[in-house]
Image 1: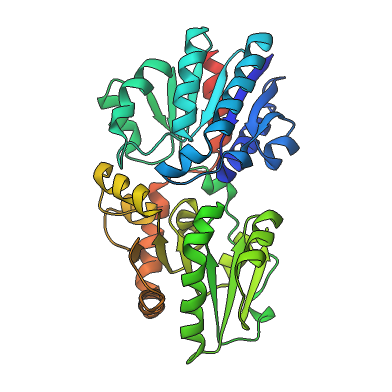
Image 2: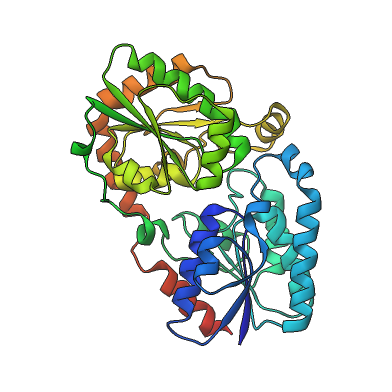
Amino acid sequence: MEALIVAGEASGDLHGSKLVRAFREFADINFFGIGGEFMQEAGCEIIFPSERLGILGFVEVAKKWRDIVDAHNSLMERVVVSKPAFAVLIDFPGFNISLARELKSRKIPVFYFITPQVWAWGRWRMRAIRKYFDHLFVVLPFEEELFRKENIPATFVGHPLLDVVKVEGKLKRSDFNAEEVIAYLPGSRKNEIMLLLGDMIKSFELRKKYMDTLGLIALHDEEAERFVQDNFTIPDGMKIVTGMTYEVLNVADAGVITSGTATLESAIIGLPMVVVYRLSTISYIIARLLASVKNVSLVNIISGRQVVPELVQRFTPEDIASKLDYVIKNREEIKSAYRNLREKLGEKGVYRRVALEILDRV
C-alpha cells in the first residue's frame, strides 16, 4: 500500500515523521510526499523538500510561487502513477487545501492532521475544508466543537507536542557560569529571523549591562546557523546552539520566543517567556484585517487569558527587556498557569491514535 503525506515546514516535518512511524506499527505502508530530514529518516520518499516552501506572510508567498507550483505538479505526477490509498495533509493550508481539491477529484480519501487556525483568521476556508477533507484530526481542545458546528467531521486527538517535547536534556544549568540564562528563539524561517533576531540581540545587550546574563540563541539547523552568522554580529555573552532547542529551553530561566509552535513547547517545559511576533508591513496589515482573535500566542489563546506578554509588530529592544523583567518577577504565577494549560492539551499517544483512526476509515 502507498500513501501520500505532506508537511510544508519544520514542525510539520517532525510531526510527519512521527506519524509515519506510528502507521508502520500497524500496517505495511510506503509513504511519499513533501517533507524534510525527519520524514526522510522515517522512511518517507521525499518528492519535494519542505525547506523550499517554508514561508511566513502573505507577500512572501508570492516570492515562492514558482516553488509552490513545482511542488504541486511534482506531487500530482506521482499521485497519478502511484494511486495512493489515502493522503494525510499536515497544516500548511494555502498549499494543502488546493492539493486536497485535486486529490478528492481522484477519489482519494484525504485526512487533515493539525488543521489551519481558522478560528484566528481564514474562516473563508471552512467551505473548502468541508468539501475536500474526509476527516479532521485536531490538536487544540476547542477545535473539534468549532468544526462540528460547521458540519465538518473532526476528532480532538490531543496535542502531539506532548509526545515530542523533552522536559529534560543533556545540558545542565550548572554547565553555565552565569547568574541567569535567557533563551532566544527567533523562528525557523529566514524572514522571521531577519525581522526579529536583531531586536532580540539588542535587548540582550541592554540586560547584560546590569545582569550577569548568558544568552542562548536556539536555531533549528546548520543552514539557519550559517544564515545568522552571515547576517548578524553575535555579541560577547551570547552563544548559538543548533539542533538542541529543548535542551536550551530546559536550562534557561526565561525566554524571548517567536510566536508559533515554540511558545507551546516552552510552556510544556515550564519556561516563563516573552512572545514576539512580526511580519512584513503589508503582510501585517492584511493579517490585522483578517484576524478574529486578540492574542497571537497559543499559550494565551488556549488559556483564554493573558498568561505571558506579547509584543506584536511595533516594539523595541527596550520593550523586550522590560517584559523580560516582568516574566522573571512573575515566574511562579506563570508556571502555575502552564500546569492548567497542559491539562487542556489531552494525553500522550497522539500519533498512534491518528494512525489507527485513519486505518479504520480506509
